Length: 472
Image 1 (cartoon, rainbow, N blue to C red):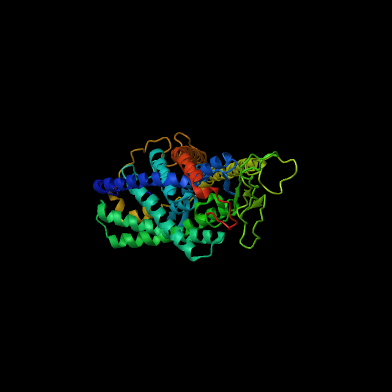
Image 2 (tube, rainbow, N blue to C red; image 1 turned 60 degrees about the vertical axis):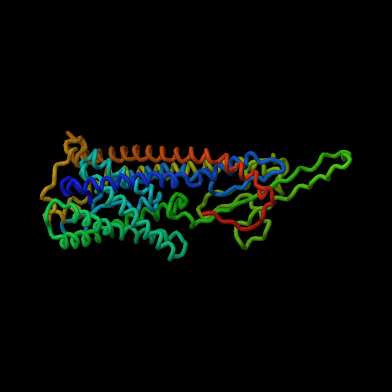
């Protein structure tokens, strides 16, 4: 559905460019929150736990969410952009003489969040327009508004609405992603028709354009839905904690411990001295509501398969039932080991995703349908393309997804696809890492104040309760 130069007049192109710029600006702010989720909390917990001392509250750890979610989401967001670029090269036949390809808004929104999803698709459209002469440069605002903003917003709204109506299971995420992707494609077709009604350069019957666009893109939506559901389902099956839309479906254990004043050393008490306070027994919140109060599992596993550990530094000294000879605070090493495990697992997912993107763009794309996509077919049949202009990057070395001066079509197209995947991955990952770091700086600046307020609060010195707790 890439709109070329000449379909939409200049005033409407400028207006949609302003809308696209505003949407990207809003998405940058929203992506800071999505990529920084858990960062501030994890930093505050880690700092408070390491500084716990006698007479103060010990650690409050969210078990199974060691480290910041943003550290895993930022690389995944760059990978999602590269994967969307690769799969968009795989045109599939939908009707006689017509093909379709993935738009990617639903997939990006469900995997990494709606704001980050808008940025993912925008990066893909930018790389396609600049390097491959796919989608007009003057129509870049139209394409971002239609293919990035509309698809992402509509898909995520449908997705969240369906999750509220269905059981909170992993299968529900897959089914909801299928329906959301299916709806998002004809929604983009409707949005294009509205834009063309405002600024179309050819006088055609809008009724015919609307009917043709929605009809063919309903068929394309089925392919989009299948690709989205398969991808989301595969990631949810392996690492549900990496799927933005699946957060809240898994449950993590929160273990709370506290220490009180240490017992006085043996010896004669000073006249008028208060008796020493006996050490309180640390109590852990049960992992499930049906567990007996006071049960304190040292190591457990959540539904996602991530290891969960006990309290952090300072809690080991007060933990009842510690093994003989165990050094105080020995539990502090467990979150570190879990964090390293999570990073390795994330790298494995990232490597598999990159390999899949390279395979799609470098090999499978050669067997994609050569028929025009839905917009090209409708434009040709209804005369919308009468004033199409040459692309400003038509002489690019990678124009039309082929490497210039390489005569072998298979090699030329495959190499161009691999270059595109690499370029999109680099630009997308760089963008999201910068956004993530800015979010981290803000979280780091806010953490000292939050920790000071927490430790200074009278409620902070209360003994812990055994209430069952749950984090999303």
